[in-house]
Image (cartoon, rainbow, N blue to C red; front, side):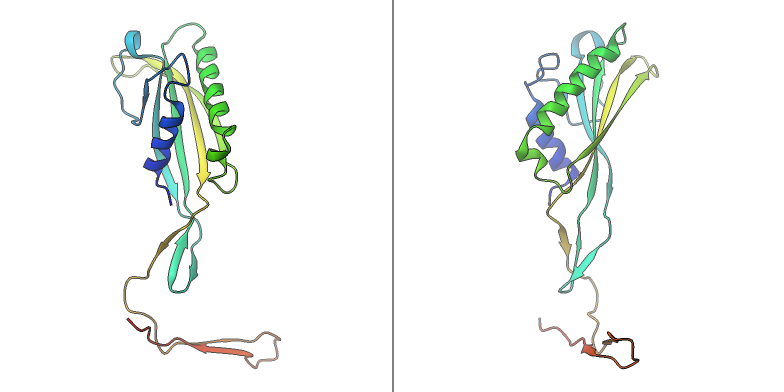
Length: 177
């Protein structure tokens, strides 16, 4: 299973040199000091969230299929038309990622996205642009073996036909090392 960092590195590799306005200015970092006159437009990649979802427990292992939230922040200089430039770059990013079956087929279901504009005038340098937020769920689950003592001597019963008499009975035995 890929981690958020793995996904971000993969996206960086897919974008480097493919967007003329940005060229090689693609960074895996949310906090990046960029001189607007020299280093913009640029793309900053970060993974602000991960959610596990419901665990599937089989064979003594808990399997999770995490959902990752990945942010692709397109930073441009604050000027008239910044929204148009940022929107063009986001459009190119979406085309690069969503038309690549090697990228989209890694996930279940198809990745989703949201785009929001921003204008940040805090601090010494102001910048603006758009944040493209991707939500991806990896097809390959992560499995963890249980930590702690195994349950032994526990009996489970199932009444399948509702007559009050169990049709299935099973007892957990001590697993062999």
